[in-house]
Structure formats: structure tokens, C-alpha cells
Length: 99
Image (cartoon, rainbow, N blue to C red; front, top):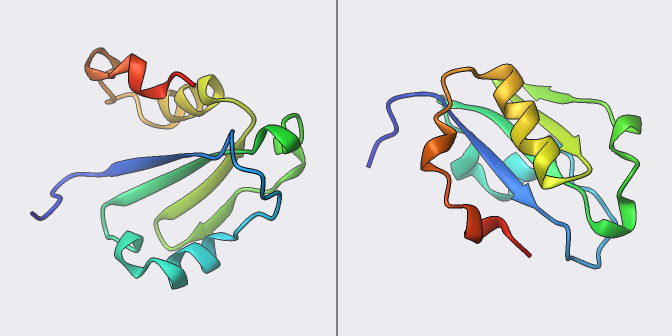
């Protein structure tokens, strides 16, 4: 099914053990399906081992897509809310995000 309006992805890496971060270019190469004309933001929650370091990482861009690193899931929601005021958080499935 074709996506007809802008969308965003949150990648939650809190519980992974790997501390190597993939660049936006690496993600787009490995998963070309995410290089979508409607994708605006990928917000990546850092692994717990890297928590507190997101402020040291630059935001990356490729055409209309941005990659932003954050320390917590709450920061991911807050960031998306700051860049897209059209989001309807009432549809959020809260238990899905609880770890």
C-alpha cells in the first residue's frame, strides 16, 4: 500500500548490546525501502549503554529524511512533536513501547 502523507520512524535500541551506530547513509543502503519520498524523520533511541550521549551526535540528513539520535523514548516522542504538530498522540499504543 502506498503511503500518501509524511511519516516518521522511531527505532528503539534501548536494550541492544551493540554500541556501534549506523549512519543514515548506512541505513538507507541496507534498507532501501526506507528511502521513501514521504519519510521525514528517523528518530533513534540510543542503546542504554550510550544513554546520555545523544547531544554529542549531529543530526544527519539525506534529501528530505533526517536522522536524530535521542537518549530516551520520551525524548523521541517530544522531538517528533516539536517537528510535526500534526501528530495525533491519542492513537499511541502505550503498552507497546514499555520495556
